[in-house]
Image 1 (tube, rainbow, N blue to C red):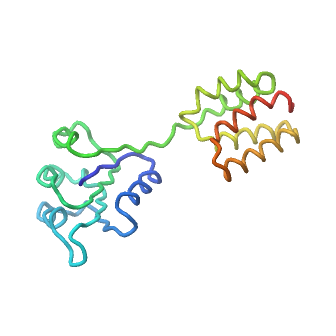
Image 2 (cartoon, one colour):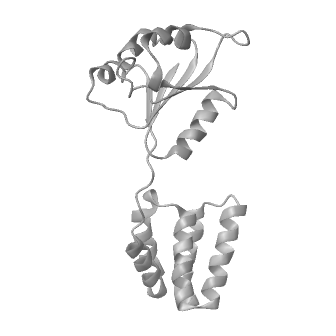
Image 3 (cartoon, one colour):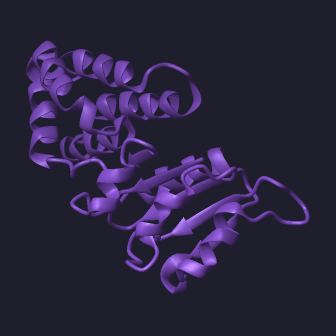
Length: 195
């Protein structure tokens, strides 16, 4: 089976590649490949295993081989194509898009620090409103990073009770199975009592 992975979050893509291909897989840089190389990659076997696990890098960027992919969609091997960029306007893409698994791994959008700081300041007065504000940014935010930003604001206030509470939350996030966002929401609701 052939899969195409693209996007700028290389860590998540790499984890998914390891999950699919395992720890031991072949890595082939497609920049110098020619159409003559493709039968060996997609149909060939090795003396060790009939089913190969292959990572192809930037296959779609090589215009001499990319259109040939349509001949090898029935490969018996597990192949992941890791692409820096995937041009969805090309005819080859339009031909294969419904026949292969294509996954995009995007980095989360950059945090709007102003919004985080606003949530912290609102939580000092109204925890419920701060939780409502948090719910709007939760899908695009990482709870551990968000907590770190809360700590930076608490340090400016230098409130020992708040710092202690955030320290406890940080430990719980890293050591328990409790949903991290529940811990953050709990802190926001308590924060007006701590200030």
